[in-house]
Image (cartoon, rainbow, N blue to C red):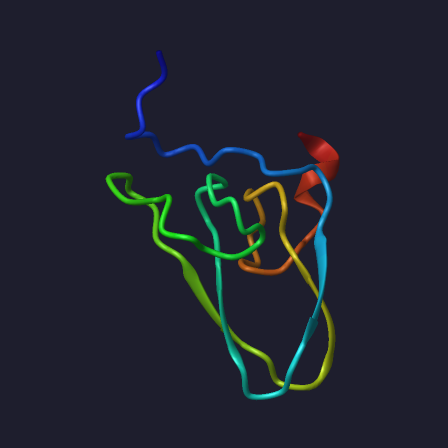
Amino acid sequence: MPSDKTDTPDIAQKAPFPVEVTEGKTYFWCSCGKSSRQPFCDGSHAGTGFAPVKYTAEKDGKAFFCGCKHTDKAPLCDGSHASL
C-alpha cells in the first residue's frame, strides 16, 4: 500500500484544467493531486508534505491550471504533462 507521505504528487489528469476566473478573486490550487474538487484544494493533502498554492486572478478570463501537478509554473500549466 502506498504511503500518503510522498514528495511525488498524484496526476489528476494529463491535461490542464481550463477555468473561467474573476479578476481579484483568490483560488487555491491543489498541488497533491488528491482533491475531489480538481483543480482546486479540498484539504485532501492533510498529513502529506503538500500545501495548496494561492492564485489571485489578474484579469477576468480563462486560466489553465495544471492537471498533472508537475508544472514548474504552479499553479498554471507549463506543458509538463507532455513528457509524463
